[in-house]
Amino acid sequence: MSMMDGFDGQRGLDGEGSVQVHQDPSAQIVGAKVFSVYGKGGIGKSTTSSNLSAAFASLGKRVLQIGCDPKHDSTFTLTGRLQPTVIDILKDVDFHPEELRPEDYVSEGWGGVQCVEAGGPPAGTGCGGYVVGQTVKLLKQHHLLEDTDVVIFDVLGDVVCGGFAAPLQHADMALIVTANDFDSIYAMNRIIAAVGAKSKNYKVRLAGCIANRARETDEIDRFCDRVGFNRIAHMADVDAIRRSRLKKKTLFEMDDEPDILACRAEYQRLAQSLWNGLPPTNPAPLPDREIFELLGFD
Image 1 (cartoon, one colour):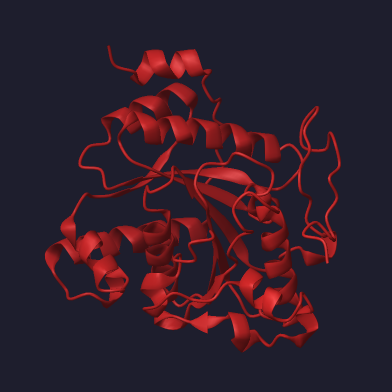
Image 2 (image 1 turned 30 degrees about the horizontal axis):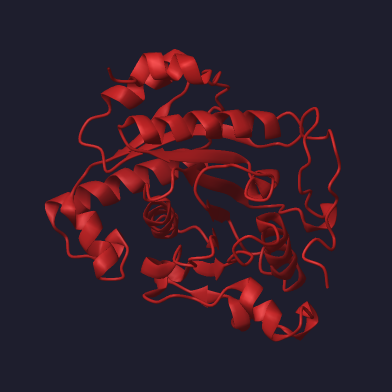
């Protein structure tokens, strides 16, 4: 079976001259609120996604988190262990998905969060979009999306190709995790451009950015003011978040220390805001020269 079976490399749909990976129309997610989490590599997307999933669960929502990274550590703190990936499990059955059962690739994490690690193709081969598409197909075939309120895609690094932008074809809203530094904000600017391109043909819109591991937010706020974007949450740079990863737990399982309680409250506030529906934003990304002039240093 080809890594690209079931996908259409149409030219032009997602922008003049572009070649994108298109998901099977029969595999659309309906009924749930769908969020995709993006940001610079190493910025804390998996920690943010898992704590946001736990926050939704603490509010009584039925949550499914899909990790889209070959490292397959997105749901690590929800389940306490690394999960096998959909792509590896499919390889084990010679890409015959009819041989799989839900328990082969779905694990239950804290608060009843359903956890899936899509994984990714081997380095230098294949396409991340294939993996996302096959994962959603399996979930639909096994009726696992019918009783789900919230789906969170935790996506690998910066958006640099149509494959890793594939979750945007399913999402209602995209969230960007950023720190208060130039590299993170530069990546955020690129992601804004990518989501803007997708929003011309898909329902996805930008909800806003989450300041993570940030004592201050002045650079983030300056950028947001310039491009017309919103900071929708601030996760402080506290050691409790680092310790939670070491303990293989979300913040919602940690002891009730003041820093942990404050972080939990911020995640719950964000989850409730997303559930209620934040107004979409339509920021205008900056050309490279302008973002350097705004945030660069001599």
